[in-house]
Length: 298
Image (cartoon, rainbow, N blue to C red):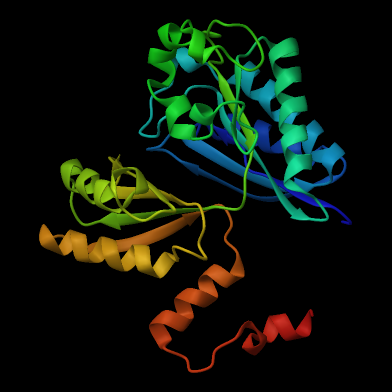
């Protein structure tokens, strides 16, 4: 591909495999894009699909996905641990190769306008595409979630950027934007006490005085009988994975709780993992040129 733009839409369905397959099919059947990954979580009741392509391809695939989600997901019956306001909850566009942030902002606006006009779904623009400072942060937009948005959307300051100023009962609302790469990273704790996960999340997230590039919340994984610190790392170069992991371990030990594992949702840049290896192995004079695959394919 001469141009690569990544798109990572999140959907409010993580349990019905048939519906998830229908969403994935929309990507696979779109010319000019490549499916990179998809993952679902039953406790979160959420699916994240990652694909890439040129501007034309990602625009088409993103709209097809939002349309399909509006047909097969009914928010009136949705329950899950992850915050959400719509069947298609959030759709970010990320410049990767021969693409600019300005192009991704324009794509977000074009897709948002079409979704609002053709599907009658309220659309909010966020991150770099945001039209007001209050809408830059996804948490601000999503506060109140689907259930609370029926009243929130009536407030003048929360008039959607596109679409009707009333909630779509079945599909909810959708947030579309442009941003840089982030890592969805979760750490699992050997306890079912959600208060501990919430306290740790509060200690590490930026909004409460923690790391500048960390967004975090506590989540119950009821199927496994444990809790999780669920995070978005918005700049792994400035707040690396290992630093967050070690901080969570230290905070958990205060409550007599062990970390039993961690997980990455979606894809992660190789450099982020190289940084982890370098930190724990203390490799002297380490560089990415020492990685075999990097030399083979350079």
